[in-house]
Image (cartoon, rainbow, N blue to C red):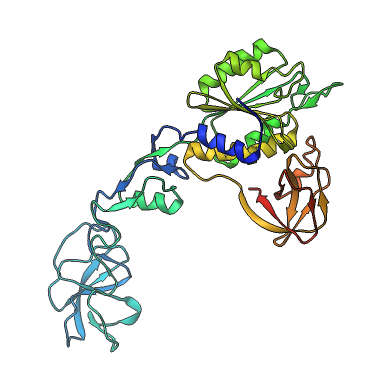
Amino acid sequence: MKTMISVSEAMHFINEHIMPLHPVALSLQEAAGLTLAEDILSPYDIPAYPQSSMDGYAFALEEGRSTYELEGEMAAGNQQQFTLMPGKAIRIFTGAAVPNGADTVLVQEKVKVENGVLHLPETPLQKGDNVRPIGSEIQRGAHALSKGDRLQPASIGFLAGMGIDTVKVFPRPRVSIFVTGNELQALGQPLGYGQVYDSNSYTLRACLEQCQIHQIALLQAGDDPDQLQVLLAKALEDADLVLMTGGVSVGDYDFTMQAFEACGVMPVFHKIRQKPGKPILFGRKENKAVFGLPGNPASVLTCFYEYVLPAIGKMMHQPLSLSSKKAVLSHDHQKPAGLTHFLKAVYDGETVSLQKGQESYKLSSFAVANCLAVFPETETQFTKGQSIEIHLLP
């Protein structure tokens, strides 16, 4: 197990030890937002018949002819097949099949109809105007979407239009949130002396649901190593990802490492040279990942955004890391060497300003921040007007 590593080393180890989840077959509705685990070929020509792209009139365009005799109509969904004779025209609607014998559709606003006779405008027409040819969207057997493509709303509609109702995708992980500590009190109960309300499970659940992850179990244990081991074993049975909060430092009641060992979780690293969130613990059991997050609320949230979110992205075969960019620092700042600082800040589109209340127990400043300002571990002095890295919050 590595200990007291750099931020970049932590990201490397997480990326190295987390693999995409095993693909599953889901309905189109369930698969929205997920990533394809296979290439998709079209089973049909789309459209499967010559299709009108306008409300208007269909006919076979003949050079020198300016009038056509009207004969019936063709609405979308009409399955009757017939052949339109030369010199005839038919009223047609958007999406309807263009009958055999017709090759052109003229939009209704451009024609004149008198006594059942269609009069063409003087403006020149082209054969094939306003007709969608067979396979003009995609041809049968053609490559439609690729493995690794994320299923956006347009992708879902495209697949549905080809008649595909089930696809193989990388699923969202099942997650267990595991909060620990004798001091935790449930919301709605009176707060006793020495107690704090459990906010971490609410924060983490909100983060997960922001990622459209809804298979979330909540477990809670006191500072009891036996109870911790039993519940961690249960979490590992039911979840792909376990997020534990508290109990990862070196105090007399920090039993998370013991639980890792008892449950067969291989610790990959413990402690990162950063602030907040230095005591973070990361481990793996087979293809399941376990994060031991610090107990302080701002540390939990920082570590989720910087490490857990990219790990979820790797599981789902998606780039879910926070967006990074450069911004101009609005004021001087200094810090000691030795730790990377992730500080709560507000970015106005040009400059970034650090929030008051950077302590790891304070969420009040996090609640109004829209980014994390990144100050590298080796640097100590930062000046107003200097360009620094920021990570934009979702």
